[in-house]
Amino acid sequence: MKCKDIIRIIEELAPPKLAKDWDNVGLLVGDKEKDIKTIMIALDPTQDVIKQGIDGDVDMLITHHPLIYSPMKRITYDNFIGRRIIDLIRSDMAYYAMHTNFDATAMAEEAAERLKLSNLKILELEEQDMEFGIGRIGTLEETMTLEQCALFVKEKFHTEYVRIVGEKQKEVSRVAISPGAGKSLIKPALMNKVDVLIAGDIDHHSAIDAAEQGLCIIDAGHFGTEHIMTQYMNQYLSDYIASHFTRETVKILSAYEKSPFSIC
Image (cartoon, rainbow, N blue to C red; front, side, top):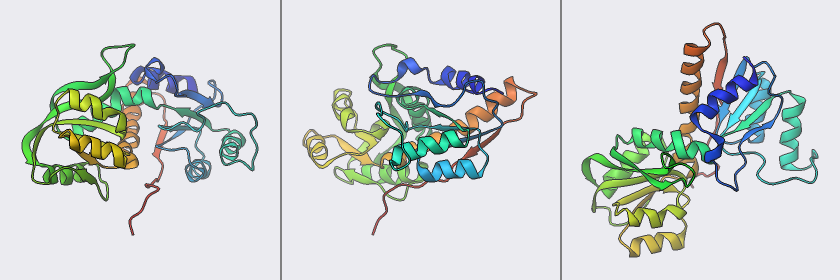
């Protein structure tokens, strides 16, 4: 398969037009005509992930977070971003990022599916397309306490810890979930009268503001809520290629990653 074939499959799922204006998605390094035999999927294009790709003879790296966000004046090996770009080019590894366009489609749906939410609606609609948007609102299979819900999230997202805002014994059933940074979604969560917002990266002042307005929060971390992307995309690409490209064999790997945070 060609790199352009993989890109077409990805963009069928997560159209680039759904990305935020500030975002940088698509093929960021490489040649669309390159033959692809091995793909690696990761959340972040770290130096370690790229090394895993080089060691595994990977032809194409697909990540959620982009390596390049803004224009660069120089690409040199003594710069931590430039070094990774040079390593990608030297190893002839194509590199593709699918960020907020994926958030608006499969990321939100997969997160809601993990929690078995019903009666789904979009938390924050995309202006360009009313069928897509960031986050999902839904109802839990059964009412539970905030503490029980936090443990449920911890189990379903396979994360080591979560932080909560609100009374542990408060009952919750209507949920808003948005993997990744969730500060900006407190207002739409309140407008939609949900009991609890599940997200990551909630800061001190935002937590206080939410609590003062009666909104509970489960902060499962940025990595904790978004690492589901790698498993999802591995399965999605495997199934799509197997059903549409029966004569092609493409090996799909998931990089080994862990949260940059640890607990003492």
